Image (cartoon, rainbow, N blue to C red; front, side):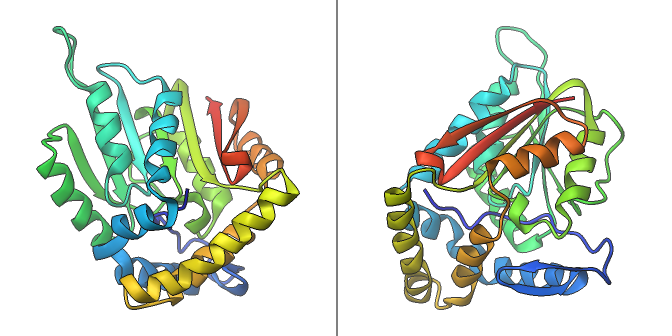
Length: 262
């Protein structure tokens, strides 16, 4: 069910200290180091996600897109969109259908290496209604109310400033728009939690074998362990201004979808 996630980090508040996995570092240092993580894995990113999750991450992303209830003509922001899995799913749903006007998807990510892979893959899939923006999640270059939906799949953990990123997601949503966040969370069953912890311990070894570098996958494990649990993240979305925030546990809570409205 794993996905390293992608990144739309922030240099905002660069003197503050934030989590980088199990370490406390400055905001600027986290932005730099997360960028290095994704530069290292971009070429084998999708392959590793398939191997670590046995392909399950694709089903979870599909569930997240379904929860956005997209329709033709809608404007969608795929934030921390990385290699484009979510953008491809969303683009099909907002495209022209039965004479309706075509919508579009903006894939935004701070990491150029990931977006390069995503652009190539989306072109291969024929997704012509996706555009790309290299952007910082804490300072998005979009107008207020520019989107009908904002989607983030396994990316919020990598925001340098989660609160600022959520505030920006809220700002760029139109009134009545929906935000859907798919992210790792806390397994609710103690026995299953033990099994998930054991699975996570295999990921650095797998990363060394497939990517040639275990460090990005050590960061993955540590970032999951330090991410807020379901209720804490629900409260963060409420604090950012989202209404009617729902929490949907997936895979016994190893991942969760948070859905909120503006």
